[in-house]
Length: 255
Length: 345
Image 1: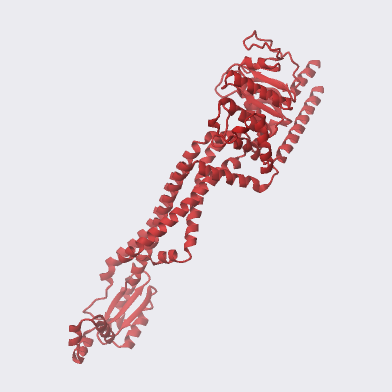
Image 2 (image 1 turned 45 degrees about the vertical axis):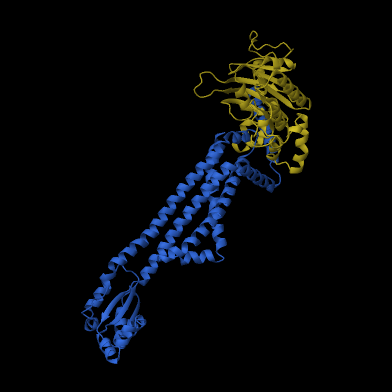
């Protein structure tokens, strides 16, 4: 569903790359955490997937779309196929909760009738139906994040990317948000959550990809005792990453 | 060999995936064509209402600009008309000997009409000049009472016949002067006691000519300057409004709104500002002008053209011009202002 093959990105002026030859594959319906400390390359990783940034080298395929072929004019259309949840919620401040969710459907060209049918259902999913007429600044951080999630899932995307979705939230709300994401994953959506908080990772026993200095230092299924500061795991991932590049290298080895 | 095939397969697979993905993406665009426009208008209208303070500020600035533009254009038209009117009133009077016959006057008219600068010639015999004198002094009993037949004959014998000449170009009278000075018939009948009035009116002609020129060129320059200033003011006002919403633009882009969907509501808001500003400016200008017109007219300023336009059914057209200008200024300013943030994100 998300496939990165030898992706490298270096920002001008930086001595080390933000992402250094990253290869990984996230399967359909998978729930994965992307973990790393500040500056590890998580945001760059997410920005690559949302096509806010373009890699210097390597290939990215998301939901069957090779991002090399997504031209500038196609970016809005491509983004509409993704669900993205942001750390700072990125809600439209001048629009109500209902309008924020409806906006995502309107830009996708959905009819008014369909929107009126869909939005209440999505708001019910995130338990915010009674707050529909409120503006974002009238809601708590957790509620705002739930609106953000409602907006991102309203179009029923196959992939949901969440960039530090709980960074601004308290422990209880964090747990609620993670459970909500799990619920969405249960409906069949592939979910990638970036975080620097290992306690979130340990709430679910899911795949954990650890980034450090722009490299994947670990990629494993979590057994509930994940520690970010634990002894660095070997650089060779202990999970077989099936990417075209990986396959290519395997064949080369055979030759 | 194996490597080469794998590479080819890989590229083929990726391209196939990309094509399939892009095809689906394009498919999602196919929806009702007017739906998007209707939503843009809806968001623009609600944006105008929700940002009522900034919208009002932009509207007021735009209305003031339109009023300034109206005043500039009106000043230019009124001054040009007044100058033209005064130029029309100016004539050169050539005084001929008393009792010059009508036939002679006709001959002289023919001679002077050969000059291409001549617009019209009016002649008047001594008797006609006397009649004019009587008409002008009809209310003065003292004069009328002393004018008996004997006095009439004396006066007619003393009064010059005249030729009143109007020209196209008051700045170039040399050829006419030349003709009058050198032509033998003119020399025979011209009255040497009273010279033609070229020089008497010269200063007046020069002043009016320069006024007309100032009114025309100055008006155009002033209108252009005001237009640029006003666009800058409106641009800044709208940009300020959009600056406060740059995050919103960025958010819209991140959730996949295309540029026209983001830009559209801002343009609609600016257009609404333009329409409201046009209506305000047209109304203020109309009542302002109608209030001032009689006073201006009293000073000898020609306001007829503008009064005619504003009094007739062309008033609707004036309103439409104001509204159209408001829309254009608003749209141009908003487009410039929003593009900065639209392409940045």
